[in-house]
Amino acid sequence: MFTSPSIELFYIFFQGILLFQALVFFAIYFIAAQKDILFYSLFLSTAAAYFFINAPYIFFGISEEEVWSSTWYDFINTPVIIVINLFYLLFLKEFFSDITNNAAVSSMFNFLLWLMPVIFVVFLLLTFLKYDRQFIYYIVKIITIFPSIIAVFIIIRLKLPFSRLVATGLSFTVIGTSLTTWMDFLYTEGTGDSIFSTTYPFFFIRLGTLGDMIFYLAAILKKWHYQEKQLAIEKLQSLLTIEKLRNKISSELHDDIGGTLSGIAKYSHMTDGQLQKGDYIKAKNSINVIQRSANEMIDKLGDLVWAVNPDKDSFTTMLERIKEYGEEMRHAKNIQFRCFFENTSIKKETGMDVRQHLYLFAKEAINNAVKHSGGTAIDFDVTFEKGSLVMLIRDNGSGLDTEQSSKGNGLANMQKRAAALDAVYDLSSGSGAGTQVKMVVKTTQ
Image: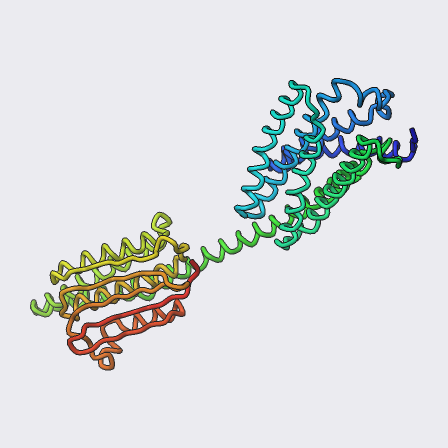
């Protein structure tokens, strides 16, 4: 048997690095509490035990032939291989679940993880029946190599900052495992005549594992840096959102509610003067104005509170609120109010600003239809068509002169809402033909 002091020195060096890295990853796991790191440390620990078993002369001074031909080695070698590859598959699955939600990849890992216990049961059954089980060793190796190759392609395709490091580490594992499996096959068949196939068949898998350790550790560090940057960006976006919300509330309070309160204060002073002069008719009219303004302010405050309420932060609650508003308004003139919502279950949630503009647009259109159309029915339709949200409010009333009404009846406000969403706004009406208001907003479903 040919031996090489250099390779044996490498075996000792590698074993020390392997055990040290296993402890390092255990320590990292207790700091980061990430399952992929735990499974990787367990993979390294069981791999270290496997490499001890398969280098008995170097570490224990026991002949390889004596160990490899023993009954206990024949029984324990393949189960250890199964456990090692099980931990490696668990590591890959957890690592990928953190960077991609690919359903096909998840299904592949779930199937292979389910297959490992089945293979172990088959191994025990063949052992009990005293059949040859060597093929199971090769099957387990192939099961690990196959997802690793797929993982390399997916990671590269994702183009994440740490993808090249992970792909390189996985490549080391794939190549090292493939060469070792081949060397072991040559040794088993008795056809190999190189020092690697006869004496050191596990040399290549050690090299592959060493490369995988180095690049995976580098990938973890880069991944953490990447995630910290993403967290910082999300935090900044959250702060910008809060600031935007504060500015929005300030603007609403100043422009709409502040103006209404100023008007109430003005009419209150007028009412006081009118009462002192005994002009009760004018005082009554002023009180009516104050009452309408107060109701308007309550309405606006209600809309503002609803818009910023996190419990109402969904597209569905917006539709429900519009429906409730339409039901309340229709009773004033005994008008039929009908809602049609199509494909709304397949949409993605819209932002708070978008929902508020949509709500106020619909509210203005419904209010106009109830007060000015003279019709008996109002339809409120919402649907998603080819990446666009389509909102339509139509009545069967007497219609509007769109040119004369362009500056009245809240039409300017609806155009403003549509412009804020960069939406397509359309108003169609004719004498006796009713009125239809339509807005089409580009969105992502």
